[in-house]
Image 1 (cartoon, rainbow, N blue to C red):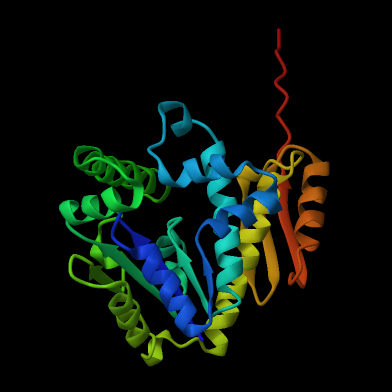
Image 2 (tube, rainbow, N blue to C red):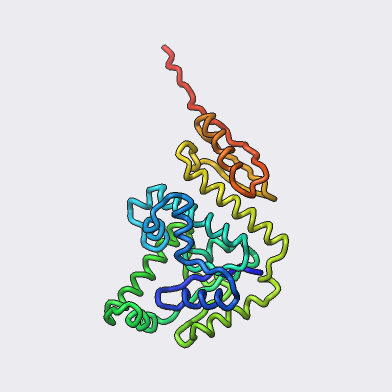
Length: 274
């Protein structure tokens, strides 16, 4: 059992390869399904979620909490899916989110601008110039978004275990190469690795649930998890927020206990003397 995360440049067949791989292995495949689940679970608009991880952030978004809120929701869903093993996750910065998972195979697909543009011409009925501009704009916007959210270069080869140049690779061959990589012992999930992923998933779900709750100041709360036990640290302004935070996290399936070390930070009173 394992997990595959795929990052693609536009027109490089990453989605098609991931879908083919999942079909051959009998695994779950998730692309837009990630956004659909995040939308359903956290009540956000699918298009807002999609924009938050695929397009260049606006100046306003750089100073807004909304982008990091969307990021937390999407990460929670991806890690929850990864915790069940045997899944191919496509896009949504999944290769970065899953970099802490030892048995995840992180794949990057790319190809020359010309080849990618040619594919988009046929797939979307674009002109040659329009398809080339689409490829270039997509590269710029996705790179900017990843840099903003994760402070990494999406083209850094060290982020990936396998890089596929699909200029001459077919979808079938690309899937076969990933399947071959999966045979390595270090990409097979073991009990310790599975427990680690479950803990990462529970921490992400807890973080997202706190962010989604209107009465919890989640920005100043840190969440960690070990063996299903969740630790909450940080500070809030009211006793009620501290109590609600523990209650929200304790209701998450799989959480066996909550250690609430959140501190209530009351504003200090200043006395003006004569």
